[in-house]
Image 1 (tube, rainbow, N blue to C red):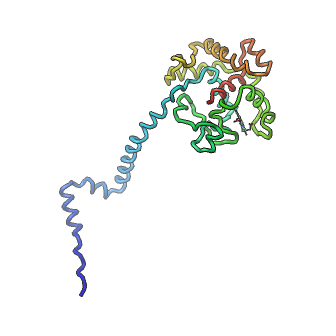
Image 2: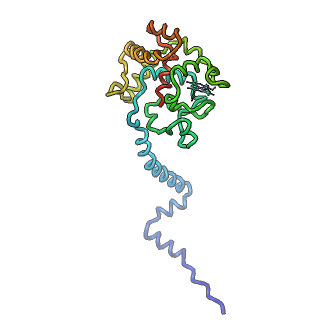
Amino acid sequence: MFLRPPKQPDFKREATMSNKQSGSIFEFIEKNSLLLGVSIFVLITIGGIVEVVPSFTQNARPITGLKPYSALELAGRQIYIRESCNACHSQLIRPFKAETDRYGAYSLSGEYAYDRPFLWGSRRTGPDLHRVGNYRTTDWHEAHFKNARQVSPGSNMPNFPWFFEDSVDVGTVHAELVTVRDVFGVPYDQGENPKSGNTLEETHQLIIDEAAMVIEQMKDQSIKDAYAQGDVKDIVAIIAYLNRMK
Ligand code: HEC
C-alpha cells in the first residue's frame, strides 16, 4: 500500500485571484527588477533618515558647560591646523579601558559642537590630546615645543622654534570669530561665555587680556618682553588652546 501524495495547492489560480482583489501594482513592481531595487532603496533610505536624524541633532548639541573658543584659544586652534598637528595627534578618546585609563573620560559628540572643522585625526604617532589640559602644564608645553626630546627622550615630535618668534595672526582670528558668531550662531558674549570683538582692535585687546594668564606661567623672557610691547606670540596661543582641552 502506498500513500497518496498530498494535494498541491493551485498557485496559478490563487495568484490570479489575489491579483484581481488587490490590483496589479505590486505585481508590476515585482516583475520590474530595477523598479523593485529603487523602491527598496528609497524605503530603506527613509527608514534610515528617520532613525538617524533625531540622534544626530540631539548629540550635536553642546554638552552643558561647554563654552565657545575664546579669541586666544581660537588663535591656538588655527595654529594647530596650520601646523597639521592632527597628522600625528588625535582628539578623540574611545570608550575602551586602555584609553580611559590613559587619557581620561571618553569623548562625547556634544563636546565638539563648536569645532569647525573637527580635529579628531586618524593617526596617533603621538598621544591623544583631547584632555591634555588635565595633565600637562604651561611650562611643560613651553619646554616641549622648544625641544621635545628634552622633556620626552626619544620623541620624534618636531621642534617648533617659530612659535616663539611669530606673532598671533589677529586678522584671521577676528574673521573666524565674527563668522562663527554671525553665521553659525555660536553664543559668544552670553552669560559666562567668552567675549567676541566687533572690531579688529577689540579682538586684539581680548587676545592681549587673555594672554596675561598664560604668560605669567611661562619662563621665556623674550615672550614676556614682547608682551610688554603688546605683542602676543604664537606659543602663547597654542598653549592656551592645549590648556583648554579638558
Ligand atoms: C611627527 C609627528 C608629530 C607632530 C607633527 C606633532 N606631534 Fe606632538 N607628539 C608627537 C609624539 C611622538 C609625542 C610623544 C612624545 C613626546 O611627548 O614628545 C608627542 C607629544 C605631544 C604632546 C604631549 C602629550 C602627552 O600626553 O604627553 C603634546 C601636547 C603635543 N605633542 C602637541 C603637539 C602639537 C600642538 C603639535 C602641532 C604644533 C604637534 N604635537 C605636532 C608627535 C608629533
